[in-house]
Image (cartoon, one colour):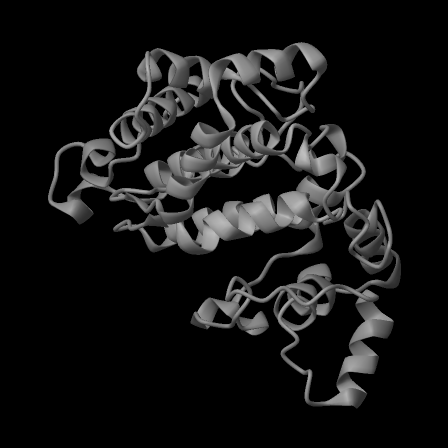
Length: 305
C-alpha cells in the first residue's frame, strides 16, 4: 500500500511515521502503528466523527480495508497487551532497519519472471521459521515438529508446476479436441503478465480456437479448489496466478485482443477478486498460517487496484 501511495499519498509513509514518533518522544507502536492497523484500516471509530478526525490528524488519511484482517479478535490486539519499544521497531523501520535496506515488491513473481527483490512470498518463509523456533514437537505429541505441523517450504517453481498439472488434467477431462493435452500443456506455459505481443498472439491462435477458449473460461467460472493444508498460502496464491493468467489468455483468444487494452483500469483486480471469492479455499491447523494466507490473498487484490 505504501508503494501504491495509498497511505496518506506518501511513498515513504511508514518511515516518516516512525521518524515522527522518534522525534516527538512517542511510542511508535501504541501511539501510531496500533491505530493505523486497528483503527485506520478497520475504521474502529467510524461512528465517532471527532475521534476519526483526531485519528486522521495523527496518522493521515488511510483506506478502510474490509475483510476481517484488522479486526480486534485476540486479546493481543489491544495496545496495552504488547510492548514493542521504539528500539525494537528501529530494527525494522529505523535508518538502518530491514525495510529501508531492501527493495520490496508488491507482486509475487511467476517462477520464470522473478525480480531481484523481496516479495510477499517472504511472509510464508518467515512464518515457517517463526513456528519452528517458537513451538516444541512435544506440543503436538510428535518427535519431529516439522512433520507434526506440516511446515515444509515448497519452492515456487514446484508450486507452479503442480498447479499447472492440476489445471491441465482438470481441463483435459472437460475439453474435447485433437491433441488437447499437449496443447493445454503449451498454453499453460504462456505468460501473459507483461502483455501479449504479435508472436504470442499467433501462437495462441494456433493452440486454441475461439470456441475452445470460451469453453475453458466457462469451466474456470465454476472451478473450486481447496488446499487441505494451505499453510501460508503458497499453493493458493500460485493457483490464483495460474487462473488469472489462463483467463487472460483465453479472453484474448476470444476477443482477438488483450482485454487489458480495452477494459477498465481495474480489470485485473476484478478477475483476481472473482477467483479469490469463489474458486480458492483452504484449511489448516495453524490459525497463524490462515491469517498470513488471508494477508497474501488481500495483497494480490491490492496490487491491481
